[in-house]
Image (cartoon, rainbow, N blue to C red; front, side, top):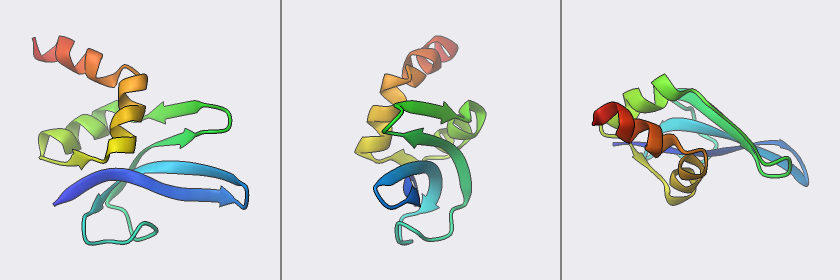
Length: 85
């Protein structure tokens, strides 16, 4: 099973996170299937690769709660509902 989850990057006390599609059995820093965005909690910046995220969600990938909240704040699901309707 594939999940969309955060992968920690950056330096000490200055973390940024990549949003990656990764196998459930892999550890946090394991090899990702694909990078689909990043999140910087200090600058409160988010960059998303929307087609890649849609691809993995359609294939059955489950976002973690944190990634789901990030996507919701970026109004990702609002756009998705418009395209589905």
